[in-house]
Image (cartoon, rainbow, N blue to C red; front, side, top):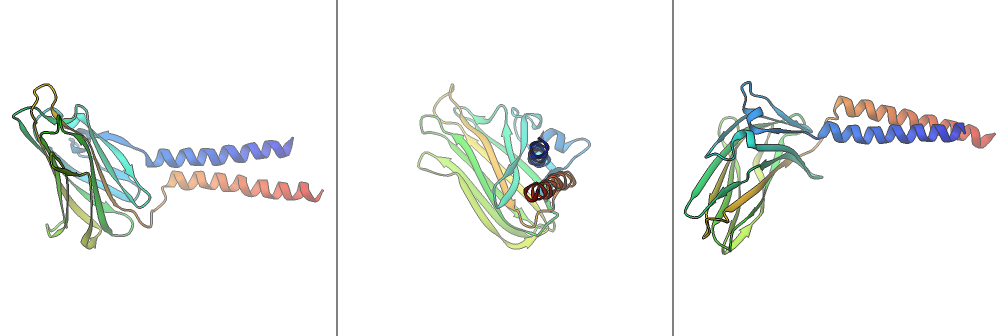
Length: 230
C-alpha cells in the first residue's frame, strides 16, 4: 500500500512539473497591450520582445491583433493572429507595419524564420509579407519574404543573419491587395515568427517543479530498493 501511494505521489509530481513548464512558456496578449501606455514586454523562453509599434488601417486595430507564443524545436518567437483578419476587398490595397526589438538572454540570435497563413479569392489578389532585421544601430543583418500570388506562393522563409546579435530590430510590412470579389476579400490570418533558440535559461518556476519531481523520483527509488531487499 505504501509503495503504491509513493508511486502515485511521484507520478503527480512529474505531471505537475510538466504542466508547470507548459504554463511557464505559454503566454498570450495583444499588440495594444504591448504598445501601451505603458509599453510592456513579451517574453518567450530566452527571448524578450519590446518597443512594439503598429500602423495601418482598422480593422484590425492593435487591440484586435493577438500575440501568442510560437515555438519549434530549434526556434522560439511570436505568432500574430488578427481577429478580424488582415484583408482587402475588390479594388483595395491595404498595408500594415509591425516593428519591435528582440533581446536574447541566451546565445546571440543567429537566424530567423517567417511563415504566413492566408488565402486569395478565386485565385486573384495578392498577399505579401516582408521583413528587415537590423542591429540597434540600424546595420542590416538579413531579410525575409513570404507571399501568395495567382502565379505562385512562398509560405515560409528563413535566413541566417549576417552576424549573430544579442539585440535586433525587426520591421515587418504586410501588404494585402483585393481580388475580383466584393463579398470575398483576400485574407491573411496568421504570421508566425521564429528566432534561434539555444542555451535556454530555465525559468524559476520550471526549476522548482523539476526539483519536486526529481525528489519524488529518488525517494521512490530508495523505497523500492528497501522493499526489494526485504
